[in-house]
Structures are given as C-alpha cells and as structure tokens.
Image 1: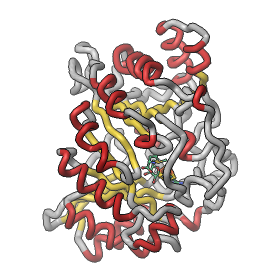
Image 2 (image 1 turned 135 degrees about the horizontal axis):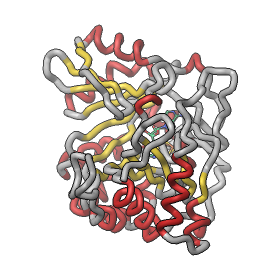
Image 3 (image 1 turned 180 degrees about the horizontal axis):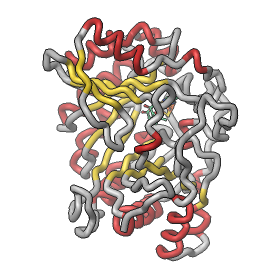
Image 4 (image 1 turned 180 degrees about the vertical axis):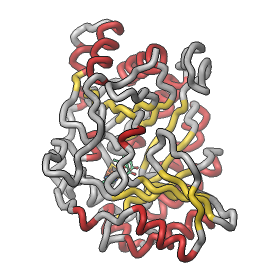
Length: 339
Ligand code: SAM
Ligand code: SF4
C-alpha cells in the first residue's frame, strides 16, 4: 500500500541515520568540540532499524533505503545491518520497478574508513554509495573537515569503484569563499576518475549557525562555471531524485547539482527520515518529530507503528520556507538529523 502525503506525493525513499557520531567535524555540519552525543541506549538497535525498515518496505512499498548519519561507518558491524536489510522484499503488488525484489540499498559516507568496509558492504547487498569530498587541496580539506584525511577519502573512492559500486557518486557541498574556487577542479576529478560529482547547495543546517544566503553558490552559477570549461547538456526529468543532472557533451560522464535553496524540489519530494534515536521526520527541515523509538520500546505493535507513520506523513508540508520570513531552523543539525 502506498504511503501518500496530503499533497499527493508517494513516499518511496527512507533515509535511516544509524548514528549521530562522526570521525570528522565538517564546519558546515558540526562544531569543533562540544557536540552532545546521544546516549547509546537511545540509539536504535539493528533489530529496531530492521523492524521499522520492514514496515516501510513491506507495508508501504518504500523501495529505497539510504543509510547515513553522522558517519555510518563509525557504527560497528554495518555489513550485518546491510545484510539484514537486503533480506527485505518490496511487495510483488507494488508499482515499483523493484516489486518482488530487495529495496535499493545505499549509503552516504565521508569515505575515510570506506576502504576497510567496501567489499563486505558490497557482499552484504549494498547497491550504491555516495562519498563526500568538498576539496582536493589537503590544507583546505583540513580546514573544512578539521581532520587530515584527504588521502584516505580518495582511497575510499577508489575502493568503492574496485568493490563494484556503480556509479560511485561524490557529494561536494559548495560554500562561497571556502571552496567555490574548486568547482571546476572537482568536475575534472569526476571526469578523470569516472565518478559522478554532485554539487550540493549549502543549507542552513550547520551547527555554528554561520549559514547566510550569500554563502550559497547557486545551481546556475555552478553549472555556468563548469559549462565554460566542459560544455554540458541537461538531462531531462529529475523525477523524485534531488539532483538535477547534466552530461558532458564530450561523453566524459555526468554531474548533478542539488539546488535545495535556489530551486527547491519539494514538489517532487518522496523522502522521509528516521534519526539515530528513532525520531521520524517528514522533511530535512521539519520542526516536528514523531517518536517511533518510544512507541516501539513501549510495546507498540507493527500495526500501531504503521498508523503513527501514516499520521506523520499526513503532516508532511508542501515545502521548506528557507529564505522566507517564517523559516524556522530545525533544532537539530545535519549530522543529528541524518543528511
Ligand atoms: N557523514 C556522512 C557524509 O558526510 O557523507 C553522511 C552524513 S552527512 C550529514 C550527509 C551529507 O550532508 C554529506 O554529503 C554532507 O556533505 C552533507 N551536508 C552536511 N551539512 C550540510 C549543509 N549544512 N549543507 C549542505 N549539505 C550538508
Ligand atoms: Fe561528519 Fe558527514 Fe557531518 Fe562531515 S558532513 S561532520 S562527515 S556527518
């Protein structure tokens, strides 16, 4: 049965945060120090994650599960979780192209430990991976992530390719005055390494609260800069995916741009999220959460959980209000929500 929100959007994609912890401290996401971690007892167990995922996939025909965080690879035994999720089946009655098959399983990671896990995750059933990389300069990498791990991230990208993930995508958040001078260099990297770079507009989910609109480099600017060096043509119809995509006219691959701020794609949004502490959110920027952890640990049945999920989806708003006077920043940051 489809999970449909009040604006007629069918929910197909569930993002599950497996931890709020991270081995990086990206300036656009976390503070350098003083982050308050969830008590471990408040973090969903693998069994609880599997139970919730099963409700979404088997009852509500959700056909995509993305594991994120925080940094998902800092949680021990991730291949075990992936293996459990790979055992789920999208109902044969679903209109999804994956009807009768396992859901599409993906992960977003900073890549620093990915070399150690790539083969095991692939063998366990992970289909796709996005690795974050905002700069190719070692000093800027240290400035942006507060960790000296560029080499290990580049290794992680290679390991992902060798393990057979295809396509491997690279996420690059662009912040004006920080790494916007590297947009073309990152595009070149993608062309040479055969990875699809997805540029992300900087969003107001940073812990320090330094986001201002002027720091957002728009999709139009990003595409124009790359197009000047490597001519691009837009690929039609994004569908529910957040990235608009372009292909290089010379056939050297694709780029994507996620224009959350300048061209919100809320009208096509098919995503919902569960935080590491089991809070269900119907938007990255939502200010309301639905406590599935409490319900589950209070003895709720799957039927009761499904009713609560439907109730929550019934509150999904038309879209975020960034840049409007009534925008309220979510109380939690990107790493706490699960990007
Ligand atoms: N730790 C993993 C990583 O960095 O890939 C997964 C979690 S991270 C929160 C998910 C994605 O959100 C990353 O691609 C990251 O660059 C992006 N992100 C974090 N803070 C952001 C912000 N303020 N604006 C835009 N993207 C952001
Ligand atoms: Fe960690 Fe990812 Fe946030 Fe960077 S963006 S601090 S890697 S959770």
